[in-house]
Image 1 (spheres, helix red, strand yellow):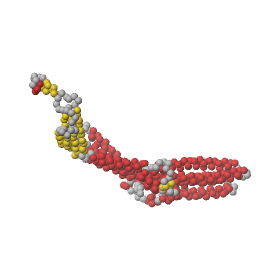
Image 2 (spheres, one colour):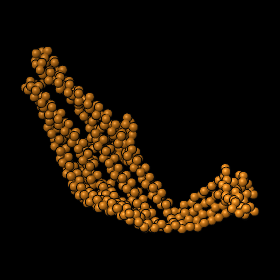
Image 3 (cartoon, rainbow, N blue to C red):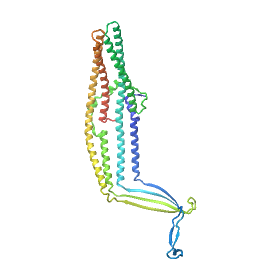
Image 4 (cartoon, rainbow, N blue to C red):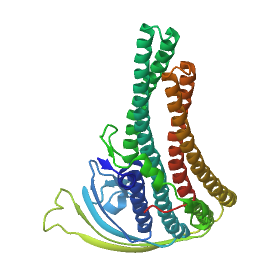
Length: 424
């Protein structure tokens, strides 16, 4: 896959594991909303009962009814051995306060899922941006180490030749060998970090971790696209921030919970109507066309009035009220946190731009110093210790420069999230 950073972000928004789960959560919320809605819609159910008396019950009748002596009883059986009853019932909820609150809660739950997806998209964007930058830095670090090793290898060869001719001390060779060994160790570590960086990027994209990627943006491209001084003066709109909207929705859910507990003091009213038919026989003749069926129908209304629950409902209402008060406190806290977070993000981003300029300048200076020191060393004016000191200084500035690029990329992504800049 060949991807620019923007293409990587767009791809991840559609394909990352977290965003796929978020989409499923939204679909689940939609189905739950419909499930709640159906509670107040007509419910139709059918029922068939079949009974076969393996041994019928005996009833005792006074003997005089059958011409017997008074005080005696005659055992008889009533009804047929087999019966079948089929019915259809329509139930309709007429009023239930908790159902009305449930409808509102279902809408809130759906909104929570949609906001969670938006939050997930912002987190995915930041993760992909950081992972993309890490891959490019890992590759650039390998390139720098390769060039550094070429330089050290060349000077080590020169030192060995000079030692053979008696122009160089053995200590010089050993110092170059130590530097060479350190670079080789750093190369191994850089190679492993590059593999891990690619795997982390694939994970952020939603790919199998060993998918081959070709990143079309360069570090220089990212520095240009991620240096946006306009962000430092952008006004923070607290009311539109996703975290505030999530906190407000959480408060709304707590309010509905309190409303739900209060609604349980209200009566519930429902109605039903059914139609059925039954048949009787001493043998299984219910499928025959001449079997007689006797139909019936019933209409009913049920009113359930709560009277006393030993103050259990009152305790639940109190708990819900406390939860709502806590949600209000958290809402006030999140407003302060988000404002502070935006200020800190702008400050960190501004600092990262300044640090990048400093690191770029220091790298240029360290490169010139190392170049001059190398000329002096080749001319025998300075020692290998001085040369290696300036070279270590160069290596340090190279790492600082790469890290400053990563900081710009990372801090810009954090600032955009802090300012709640929408994904385009």
